[in-house]
Amino acid sequence: MIPIRDTTPSKNYPVVNTIIIAVNIFLFLVEMAQGNALDRFIFIYGLVPARYTDPHLSGYFSTGSQLLSLVSFMFLHGGFWHLLGNMWSLYIFGDNVEDRLGPYRYLAFYLLCGIASGLSHFLLNQSSNVPTIGASGAIAGVMGAYFILYPNSKILTLIPIFFIPYFIDISAFFFLALWFVFQFISAAGSRSDMGGIAWWAHIGGFVFGMLFLKIFLAVPAFGPSSRLRRATAKKTTPRLQVIRPAGPGNDPHLYGTLSITRHEAAAGTQKVVNIPWGFHKRLFRVVVPAGISEGNVLRLKGMGKQRDDRQGQGDLFLKVLIRP
Image 1 (cartoon, rainbow, N blue to C red):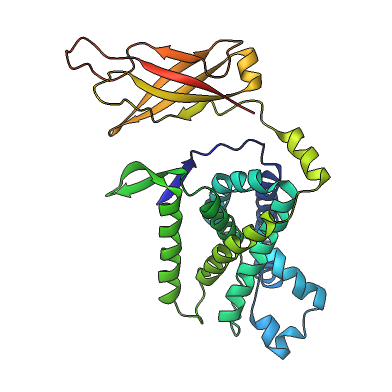
Image 2 (spheres, rainbow, N blue to C red):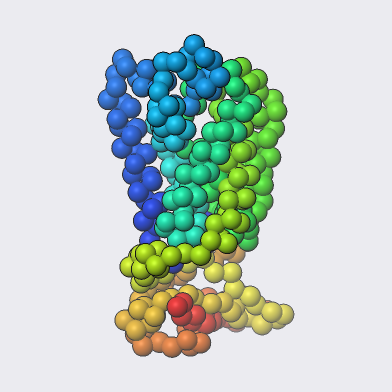
């Protein structure tokens, strides 16, 4: 299953999440510039459990270098597709978690999840001299937080069936629960003395992400965070909105809500509305006039259900919801 996007828009621009993605990309380029020294670079800055348990090996590293590796490993990647997969998942889930925690708490949360995931891997692979690298554990923590915060969100998911791409909306609760079960099954079937994917880092990151979320939500945001939130607040809602209208009984009309901001209400805007309808997805362009008020209804003629008397289709009524 490949996540494409979620249906929960963030209210603020994800400044910290974007910076984390940029840092990962930059350090990947630094990795690629190492040439023949790449293996040495990864061994120094990756997480190697044996460096902490083997006295002969640990003697080659200073205390500062050992502590640095607990953080630096989560910013390194084993290849382009490894980087792309991690950053895409962080792009989808990270903005919403940052939206809830605020930029400073989110940064601390992300780093702690990464460290906790590394320690989870270390505890179960203490004699391994294979470097572990990648942001997967930290991102698993972000996914664990998303699992708690937005279980009813929908994840548009690509499922290839016999080389045919099939797209389906899956609840975040089911998507992330299935992802976690897969990690656990993979971890149980892998050998601790072999290299490869650090499954226990994923599991530890996810579990600690849920735990750390509860702790961070109990910590109040401080002044600078509130000021940064105001500065990064989005003035518009997403141009593409997914609406699931209701049409009770034999009523040929459909009814839904369209979310906009105060800025869009005052200046007017245009949206593209995506309405799932069976196995089809109907797209409509909606013009929102300037000066519209909360609770006003936009009527799209002929965009409703087919009438029983075959006299055309009903209408689609969209109630305007102005987001604070």
